[in-house]
Image 1 (cartoon, one colour):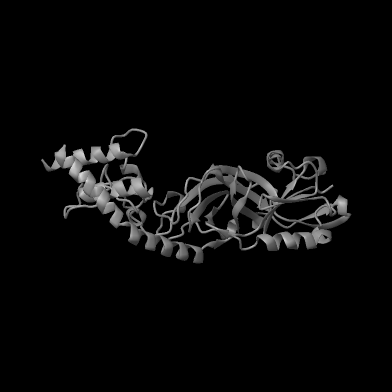
Image 2 (image 1 turned 180 degrees about the vertical axis):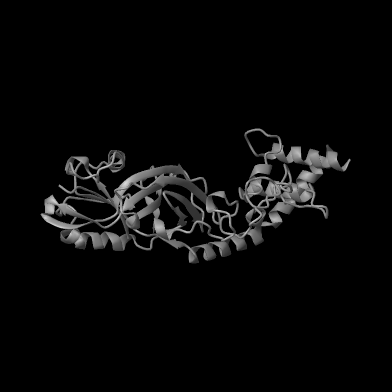
Length: 51
Length: 304
């Protein structure tokens, strides 16, 4: 049980250290994604009739 | 711009086959009560204003609508491939380059026939009917929601002897059935489709990697996704192995990195597609600290 609690405490500590890199990568990914976004074509549905 | 003409049965002469049963369902989606009625990307409409089939009187309004919508950002791209013989086989592939929720997102697939020389009574003139709806082939749930993902919808239909096969097209759209917003549209003439995109001898509908050359169709983890395009080796991403580590024999390794990754997910909510199926360690309905404890137990028991 003691080993288990120590391991959980260590994992929380390590997880905080991942944040600065993750945040930088997330911002970079946003820039790349926005630069490569698809452009939408226009779709028109014409409800009509010959008569 | 891509259009489709839905012909109202009440305004279709008896000697014409332009009206199809699907008119009612499609018109009901938008509350169409009379004609002419145009619906732009599912969300903007015009009612009346021009003699049937002749947009000339409304060109200013239509130009403004078009300009307000063209080149809007969308995460979706659609590609249509297949083969046109006596029957037409199609593969509609939707891919994403950004994240978007797939809630209520659907893919609709239509068959149209273009350039049908016709007499329009309301306008007292002959001109081409353009992209006349011939069939509403399918409405499929879109299951992808993340950048880099793609999904293919395959099917087939028979050509009608009365159609000009040179003018038959397939139109596919991505539409939200709650807001009615259309997010992307593509059309292709059936004679311009590619039946084997990666030219590996395996037709698109049978290929486990549609756009990567793999004639032998290797699939080591038997997940129906070919090895050359499979982002997740399910022989490595087993339950608990969130980091995807493997030893020099290729066997999955569960260690403290998997615990760290699971904790990081609980804090940030972020994961990738290979991790999602292997996080629920205790196989209940939730991913939470109990799964962390269960994973720790597994690792401790394995190391003992």
